[in-house]
Length: 320
Image (cartoon, rainbow, N blue to C red; front, side):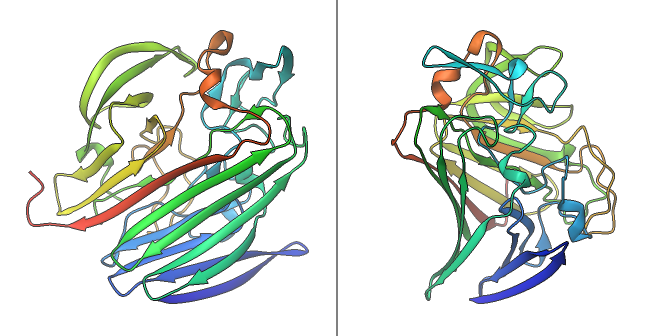
C-alpha cells in the first residue's frame, strides 16, 4: 500500500492532494477541497471523471467527486420548518437550495489525517461548521472517512453531530464511466436495483413515488430519486468485464446522467460533455414542496449521524 501527498499552492493556502494505491491495481486520489475524489483507477482504467487542471475544482459547479452536504439534492424554495421555526436556506439553483446551498461542504477546505496498516489506508477529513454559517442551524462537527482496502474495496463513511436540530443528508458525487474510453457515453451502462421511482416536476423537485422499478438502462436523461428495496446496487456496462457492487445504509439514491456539463477539460484530455458519466448519489429523498420528506433528513441535536457507501470493484469473465 502506497501513499503520496502533494501540496499545490492556492492563494495563501494549499490544495492538499493525497494518492493511495494498493497492490491490486486500485489507485485513489483525493483533495482536501470539498473532501473529494479527483481520480479513481481500477486495473489501470480510469473509472471516474476528474479535471486535468486541479484549479478547476475551485467553485466547481458540477460537483465532480465532491462531498455533498449538509444536504444532497434540491430543497424546494430553500425553505424548511424545524421545531416550528422557519429557516430560509441559501438558493443556488434558481429558487431552490441545491446540495447544501452557496456555502456548502463541496466549497470548503477540510483537515486531513492518514492511518495505514497492512490491509487498508484511511484518509479522515474533518470540518467544523458554525450555526447558520451555511444557513443551516447548529454548530456541527463532520467527518468523511475514505478507506481503500487491499482487496479492491472502497468505503466512504460520513459522521456528524449538531448542537441543534438540523438537516443532514451527506453523499458523494463521483461520475462513473466504465468504458475505458471517455469518448464513449454511458448509454451502454446498466444499473441493477429494485425500488420505487420518484417523479420530479419541471424544476427537478421531487413530487411523489410513481412506479416500481427493477434495473435501469441509461439510454435517456435521468435525474431521479429511487427508494431502494434493499441496499445493493450493481453498475456495469455491456462492453467490458468491469462492474461495481455498491452497498449503503442510505435509503435510496439519485441517478444522474450528467446532462448539465461544464465542458472543462478532463484527465482523459476530453471535455466534460453530456452523458459522459453517471452519478450515483446515495442519500435520503430530497426535500420537496411543503417539506415533503423532510423528516428523513432531520438530525436531532447531540444525536450522531452515521452513513456509509461501499464500492467493490470486480473484474469477471461474463457480466450477462
